[in-house]
Length: 159
Image (cartoon, rainbow, N blue to C red; front, side):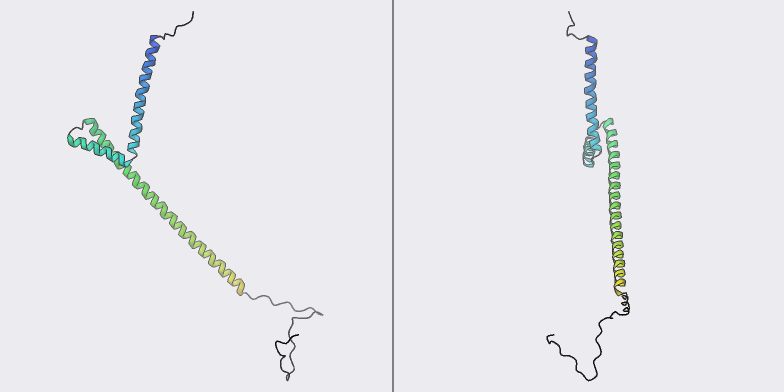
């Protein structure tokens, strides 16, 4: 007539074992994730070290916790070193950027000065004199000299 919904006891035991293993792995992953977040946060790491030191001063620190305290202190020192190295690198990059900006400004000023000097040289250069008139062509309008005894024409008269 067909199978009944009863599972094989061996399969059921394997499934239960697998579920227990999954729960245990999840707890371990959560613990590792929390530890990683603590190890990358200097404030949380310092708080954890202080908590362990408080247990040590009360005499409640066992051998495992003492080893963990030593590891936490080592992680804290390394984290401080990384933070200081990062700050030094950022300061060096800022100094390099400031120096590059100064050099770029100096180059721009030098280029502008050269352009102004070039323009001044062009402006100061004498223009070519006009070519001489061709035969049969009148030259530039130069007033004819007046005879010696005549006064200059009055100004402001209508033409």
